[in-house]
Length: 206
Image 1 (cartoon, rainbow, N blue to C red):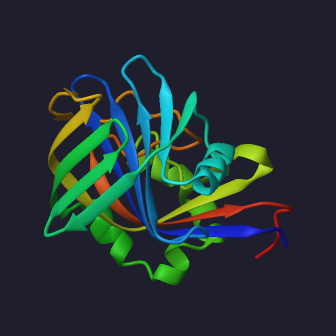
Image 2 (image 1 turned 120 degrees about the horizontal axis):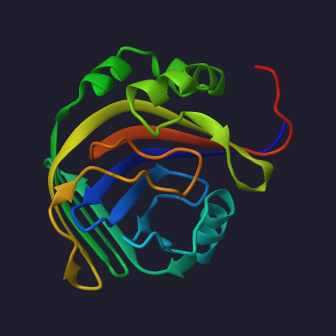
């Protein structure tokens, strides 16, 4: 059996009217301890990783595709219906909304099933139908496989986003889809409770 890395926490997907899109990871548990990171795609398409340590940056950059990797101070907080992230040139302040229909459906599935690679391989095609651009299983960098097990999903109803001190414009759909890996976040901005599993080595029967 190959090596397995598990990241447990939240992923937020945010789009702006200017075309800047961001995927924010807030990890309560990971091989690198608790940390947060940000993947930013600028309006012209340049993809930038903002990570807090060399170790985390090297791992994430090996799994996803970026044009630039920056190791910067990253702070993130989610509480009382608000999400705030400061990472290098990126500043996000977002207000969370109600649980979505997909979030309600995800909560009906036992967690052990919802995050299992066998289940995630089976439902990946359906995920793309329900939420265009989204897949729950696919191939990552360096011959690895990756799985996204979502157990809850809330809307993001409003956000202010700035890059290099400039306002990126009002909250908007995540369009076009981000191009960091095999899956995008849902087009509608949201915050997902998720367990991400990355596997290396031979695919084993489960």
